[in-house]
Image 1: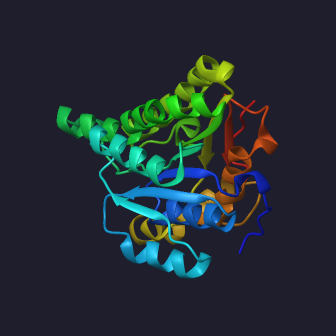
Image 2: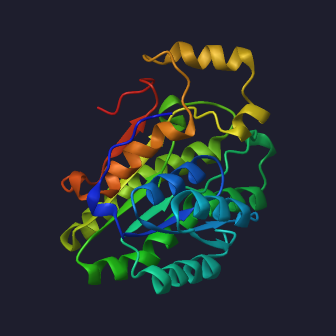
Amino acid sequence: MTETAIFPDLKGASVFITGGGSGIGAALTDGFLAQGANVGFVQRSDASGFAAEMGEKHGRAPLFIQCDVTDTAALKAAIDQTAEAFGPVSVLVNNAANDKRHDTLDVDEAFWDWMIAINLKAYFFGMQAVIPGMQKLGGGAIINFSSISYKMGQAGYPIYAASNAAIANLSHTMAREFGHDKIRINALAPGWVLTQKQKDMWATPEALEGHLGLQCLKEHLYEEDVVGTTLFLASKVSRMITGQVICVDGGVVQTG
């Protein structure tokens, strides 16, 4: 288990996480609750059992709202519901994504639209929904999950990789647009994090060995390994960090 620092300013913060009931998102929900934050999260599947488990662990449950992030109206309503429960959202974590493998020559327009809706459109409209509240608060933090896939030039999921490149640029341009409001917007790009989905679908011994060979640090990444960096970016400890892509990948790619 990765040790995590305590960030006192996150206690009582109103946090909204997309995809916060499974995989990396579940670890993020757990991590923010451990800081004393109030967490609302959306998940397409039923995560009520996970929310109850978190309530038992932390003495207060996160607010779970079942929602498909491609439904923009439902996403905005969930953000509003979280703000009603905990006050205006001061930390947004855009985490929900889908890295479904696909071949370029097999992609049709419907699949393109679906992938963009999950991996890019929901990020933009999630930010659009929380920014007015952050402006009234006098600041806020947005962490957009990207991926090192776009820096590696990996084949097998071109729309996903392109979306992650767009997330990095979107984070930078919107950080400049809303910096005068003291709203910090950063992208966090994990490496290959071995969630249960990754283990079940793609983590063959050969693939794992090959990827580990690319890392400077010869240990596999797990969900907990990205929590500390997310908390740091959410906290005012990182108050002068914005418009950046932070890679948590064991040393596969360079950002400079």
